[in-house]
Image 1: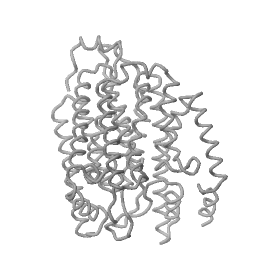
Image 2: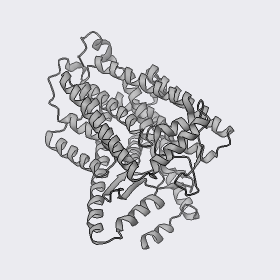
Image 3: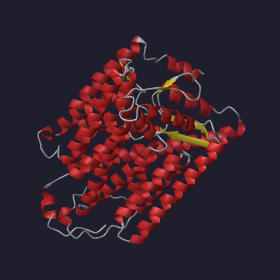
Image 4: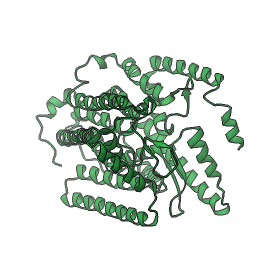
Length: 464
């Protein structure tokens, strides 16, 4: 309780808090102008460790993450002013991705407004699309191999911290819960959720098993793939002049240790969505990188088997817990979707909490149900059309890519994007900031061009 009272001193509605955060915003703006890489470091750190991005509210209103995302294009321009003049930056795939996602914001944002939905809820639905603001930095990172390695180091470092914190909380929770019915970790969960805005779960599952999960835990999936790729023996590059040197090499010991640490952090989440997403990412990445058909077949069978196990577990849970959140939300959303199947109810639309709390809900556990409820059949077609084109172009680019580091990057991005798409069945990730940023990065990776590509096109493509 002492901790809660201490946090009450730093309430966003207090004048000193608003002045202090306003001064912080001025400092961050100067930092973005003077030290672009420092802002990039801060942005990556906040995305991984900042929970829902509301740990600090600038002026008591603007989330700290939103400030960093708004400043991202400015800092990218300061890092390389040519980025907004170079026609190579806005090539076909990037233009298409930005046009579709911005079009969805405008169309269903305005539609929701004219439907009478609350502006604050409309903005909350649009918030995830702010990941598009990272496209300029994505282009610079892939353009400059040294910046690529820098971003990798920062990302790996903060994600390793996230994994360590997750495991420490899990061990502490397990030990304390053994000796006391009241866990101090429950207090930590209250602080993280209600006072610091860190979305996650420190508690127990329906079967009384301890778990620790954060919203950014899904970023452990591409990091596990990164460590896994570093365990793959590197073959001699037949055309070294095409290797940009963007791949940050690790020896097998730190790569294996890092992968083990992150897999343990994924396991203690006890999240079906994360398990299925990780298996899908592994299978997709291996399917791209291997030329052996039997490996592709085994990978596909693995995903199907895990998927069937998860579906079976979900059906068992439905029998044991017929009033669980996902099943009640699913039934309620399907009823609402049937009322407006074509264009949906618009961003910001709500339903009464089917759990009976009396609250109006606008954020739901089931990603595709949420999208269908708010954008209807038209929105779903746009979304799946965009996904299909990105995956098709990504695989096509992968097949002709000669830069070894970029091949691995494309494999990880494709594997992760497909994993997030699968996780959308169980979790609200598809229109979140992580997935939107990932789609922007994938589009940039597909369109990335340099002087080597002209020469690369004359060389026989590597087989899948």
